[in-house]
Length: 187
Image 1: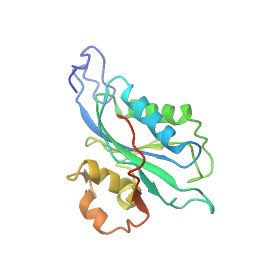
Image 2: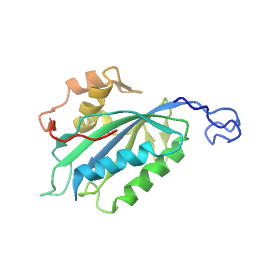
Image 3: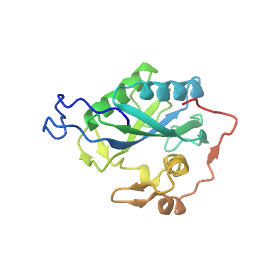
């Protein structure tokens, strides 16, 4: 990030009032309802338009089978976005939920089809175990649809407490994670 954060804004994470650190964030995006590619593009655009968030990389688009979803659920399109941010974890989560809502995400049945899913996977070395957010994401280490695109944009990636993404991938079945070269997101 090239801009200096406003030193007069109190960081809710540290409450020091000093400059807030730039944290790398890994965000997983998925869509299996409506215009899936347009939903993903809109989410990337919304993240890029967020003050104090700089999108650093976006993976290729992958088509994946739904995991633990109701029978007959359509396949997902998934990407991983790497970003640098000076926002607090709470503010990043709030933004993720606002982006989902803007694309008509209806919450209800777990793993039901959705227009957009925006998950914070890792935010720097922050750990969170609240009712609203667990960081690192509690199931990311076992989800090929997160790890394959993440590894594509950061081969050295690690999940705190779980290990290297490359090592985690070695133990997963990735046959249902198919790169879609015909689908491209603009960054």
